[in-house]
Length: 151
Image (tube, rainbow, N blue to C red; front, top):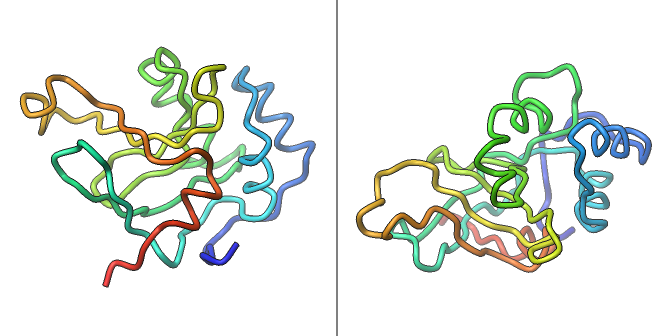
């Protein structure tokens, strides 16, 4: 990856990813598994991304979560915290932006591997007619490589 990820957790094995998939009863896209093997969570150097149709216009990746079975703030922990609304929309939260909104990945046949932005707050609810999910990218590598500097 050209957009370096720092502060990653310990490297993963394929077996750890498969264990995670069984634990959450969800199949992960192969490119996201590859991303996890290269970088188990962390902060990208370039962080800024546009969110088309969202009144806030831009987000900044604060952190991608890691697979770390014993840790608060890990993918598993956030899966348990956010499961209901995301499972209904076939999404898995994989990171957070500086505003507390979430970067998610599609887990269904219709959105598998796509990256979506989720604003679960109601700050813009009237402006967006209740819309909370915004398409960002076709896959994790496309999303990460197209992040921009915040300068």
